[in-house]
Image (tube, rainbow, N blue to C red; front, side, top):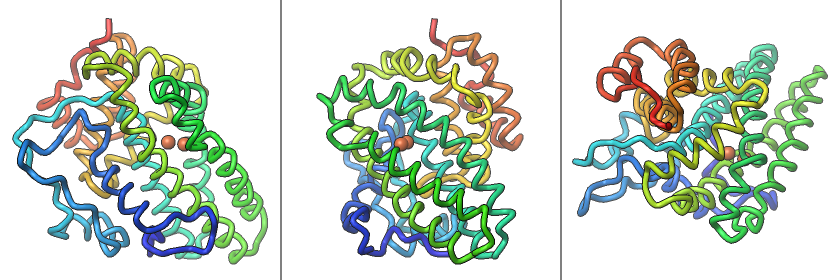
Length: 300
Ligand SMILES: [Fe+2]
Ligand SMILES: [Fe+2]
């Protein structure tokens, strides 16, 4: 299996390799309330192309991908409910590619439909709330970067995959999916590049940003169809597959801890069992014993 992040394409939607390297560095950094290297420590190096092509297990054994040690204790990052969702989406894309390479269109179709269901929630949260919030604090930076238009293009390319799934032509399905994948991976990285710095402008303190996430993202998000299912899907993907920069327990913790801190007590009472039931007991035990996820949501 090969990810195409490191290859240059003739498609106008492809971006130069330096964009990808820059964005992978951004992806490693995350939404930045948490796990900054301490003063004097180095940022983790952006992963190499061979690292991006490797499996999570292979990546974990590559010495240049180990995050820099930090003496600062991690802190909850409420905006991670958006950022680490990208890692769940990337994990599913990796599974989709595996199913296609195994010539198993039924298994691909199942993974694809789950992905599409989750992506619908994620994109609705962006279109309905996140983009507007960050345009407010970023002088229209989201609109200027044409992120909403990228959602429209993504839907067009995803519809072509849906259509190809209806047929029996495996090469047509692979071609449609590859075109969609190239655009989608670019979209995720582009959002991270544009959006992550803006999240820090939404409020001055982590506690105030938790309030912003509660009021502007979580509240509207909860009314979306499949929102609770989506939370479980993200936790399941992260706790099984981790991310390029984070092992499964860390990727899950960053998402779930951020979610808890954007919740009121009643919200977290509802969402906590969903998180718990979608991650392995060992990860849940760590979340509760070290990070207090069996406690309350703090938003009054
Ligand atoms: Fe998006
Ligand atoms: Fe996104």
